[in-house]
Length: 205
Ligand SMILES: N[C@@H](CCC(=O)N[C@@H](CS)C(=O)NCC(=O)O)C(=O)O
Image (tube, rainbow, N blue to C red; front, side, top):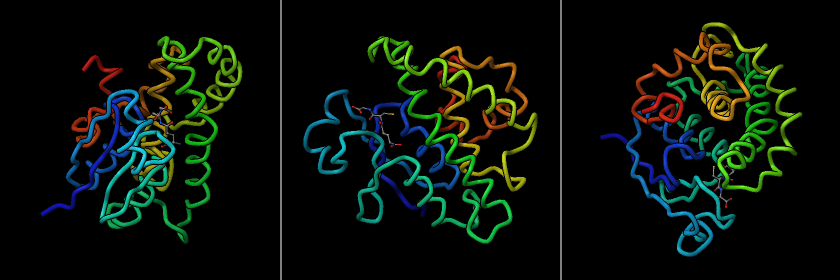
């Protein structure tokens, strides 16, 4: 019988999507706990994540927060799946670099830029981040392979994390889909990405 995680999130487009896709890659059962906007800032959710943000996961009696930390921990617990490039592997440095570029340098700015475009955050967030995102995304896109994976010649958490930033950048009109299709298409076609509905927002699904 597969192991289960309880996943707290708003839906398919927030960062719970990263955890959902990873869990599907690992064959974990996902019990969804959907939060209405606002409920994430109140009890009982604050007892799970005192920062009042999604995602959070309940797993083996523990509450886990921070999407990248959750994905890394779950990936490391299933080394045979090869989703994390472990210490000692040749590509470890490159892997850490891609992870940091995506989850530290790009992700938060992209989320704020996207939400400002959707009228959920003040429009000022777009002005604040536009020039930096344009500049960094141009470099990011130029460094993506036109086929295959980012590191270690296999699908890893770095690809999943990059896909989250790319999806936001495409939805926001900052990256043209055609420019990254060779890299992105095989990720979109992964059965786990499909069953997690990770790309639904750019596939019209
Ligand atoms: N670094 C955190 C960011 C969490 C975060 O800000 N999540 C957003 C949704 S993607 C959220 O909960 N926003 C609502 C809020 O901050 O009030 C992570 O990766 O989990």
